[in-house]
Length: 423
Image (cartoon, rainbow, N blue to C red):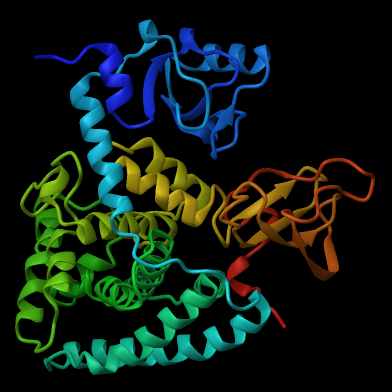
């Protein structure tokens, strides 16, 4: 027997989809029918405190999601969720919540962790280079060459994830395959930390990130460096890198089943449009779903032979646009909590007119990151860069509220963040 609206309201998760016409003061709006970053509202959600906020939402949205645990409940007439939608949403949220087995806190400040992270990054880079050389020379992968660097990187990310992410963004290499592997590994560890995975699980995710595209070593080099769009047959050859990767790992002793899952499924998509098997939804292992998101973000923000890189905030917007289709919605929302709307390495303009680059994202104040200010309000280089923590410094020198006005495209004002470094 179908449940009545009142039964649905009391026996289902606290988040409900309602028509925007049903918005009332005191409700907590947790999600919209479009990306938050396309609106004047914060990503964190909104407690409705004025009629003006309701009017703005009603102009922008057809429907929204309200969290009855954080605000008042809607009139039952405006609930638009079907029971099957509610059950599916609850299953996704519960599955992600079940990953949380550890609670990590910041243990070191950014500046001191940067030094330790630099040493760890060197160890990780040497391991990647040795393994790639072994593969090119026809030798098997020696996982031990990677594990030391992975463990050191994970230890750094656990203490303070901002330092390693900063180093990755500021010191890119020319090789896409190398940098993509490194980026996937770092983002996987950072995302896993946010989700509450234990240290051993973070190491598995990080190692999986390094190896997810290892099969590309068997593809023709000219295919990986082609600057034009791939033809249909060429794209089919590239897709075979998943199979090649599994064949390579099949000869490596000590590879965990979770890493095999990551390599096998990191190109599957939530709606079944991925490859090689066209898996969908929960048929994709959770580590595969995590890596598909990380892999896509890192690919979009890295310069590829056939495509320009997107600014990090543009890549975040694209992930959000495809939440619930290409990527699991709950994982997208959690990833954005990790990266922030303006991820580390993003060039931004402040409300003061100054320009800088994001150096850290605060989990509780994602709209108020730390910024290294590079240009003054007239867009002239500062004689000495200064760091501004917007979570603490709320006003500029004239007493006006200081905030991020918006993201800038890579290379704006001839700034190359990859050439920056901290003393």
